[in-house]
Length: 110
Length: 114
Image 1 (cartoon, chains in turn brown, green):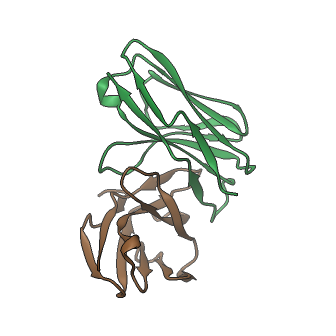
Image 2: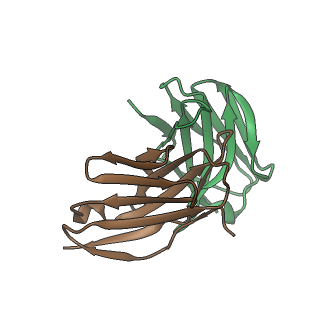
């Protein structure tokens, strides 16, 4: 089992709809969780981080964490074409070891 | 300010060359990272420095040699690389080890080994 798993996509979502991105992780000792957005040829940009069970909202983005199910998700409301990118789920396993999933390619349809 | 600065942005080197990648942050972050990213793949962790000491080496070949001269600077010395080492090399930093701290990335160095 991979440490951090994501569907590679592409996930196609109409403009204005909600995009839902999912991630599971294998190490129950993982402490904090991140979502990064990466445009082609660019470096990852931090979108959200979460470390407590429940929801965390920031503008159009909501991160959800369920440690019992080892599951973290990202919701993007009112999706815009500029949201089209690869979304990387990352997990801090402790002692600064931040591991990335393969990423989900998101395509917002105009 | 969440800026991590990497130089150079692009680097082409021969297999017999010695070069260095540089990374700088002035956010007072105590952990600094090197990642390698190949096309259409996620970043792969190479090294982590915590409080200027090497804390994680992910079994990286010795032709990659990290150095942390001070809390703001991180170098990656390259020697006798192979063409398959061509990739985007990303530096990141984070505040400290405590729960909830996030890592910020520089813009990366696109390395081509010929």
